[in-house]
Amino acid sequence: MDKEPITIAGLEKIKSELEELKTIQRPKVVSAIAEARSHGDLKENAEYHAAKEQQAQIESRVISINDTIARANVIDVTKIDNNGNIIFGSTVSVLDLETKKKTKYKIVGQDEADVSKNLIFYKSPIGKALIGKTKNDMVAVKTPSGERNFEILNVQYVWLLFFSIISKAFFSESS
Image 1 (cartoon, rainbow, N blue to C red):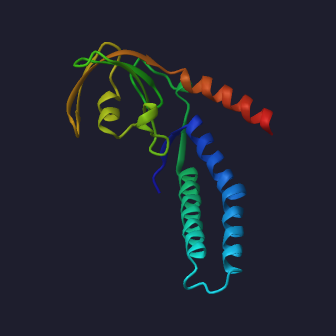
Image 2 (cartoon, helix red, strand yellow; image 1 turned 90 degrees about the vertical axis):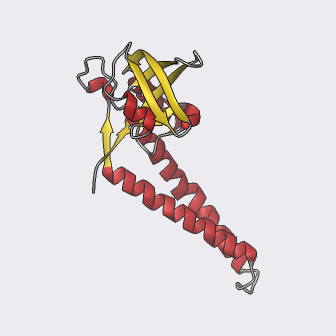
Image 3 (tube, rainbow, N blue to C red; image 1 turned 45 degrees about the horizontal axis):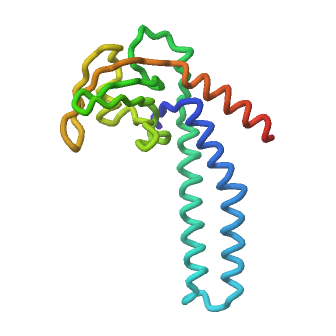
């Protein structure tokens, strides 16, 4: 069982999802199954089959999250000695040399990755190309849509700490 790196924020996010699945989604689907059973013949009961499918999806996700938590290697980049290199958890500002567009990427684990939020999986083409580089380096990335060239404008390590403080404040207020 290989450990998977995950940020503090990523771990909190999946723990929150797990809690919602167990306390909200699971009871809802159990109620939906009970309601559908009360309608009689289960062979041709579309509501029953849909609820059972939803239950299977929830249980599959619960197992997946539990596995991720069990294998989690939580990394707080603010506590790692760094010399300006891009590492797991870094927030990296880059300039696309073709489009001249500036973008900020955060290098994260698989369960946290979300391209729409610029959360890049460390094993993705862009993530692999950025790891180990430093500010002002030029990076060529082979992507499915072709080669892209970037200049690294900045590397930050404090975003995790900020998010951790904010999320702890939020979770302690809502408890």
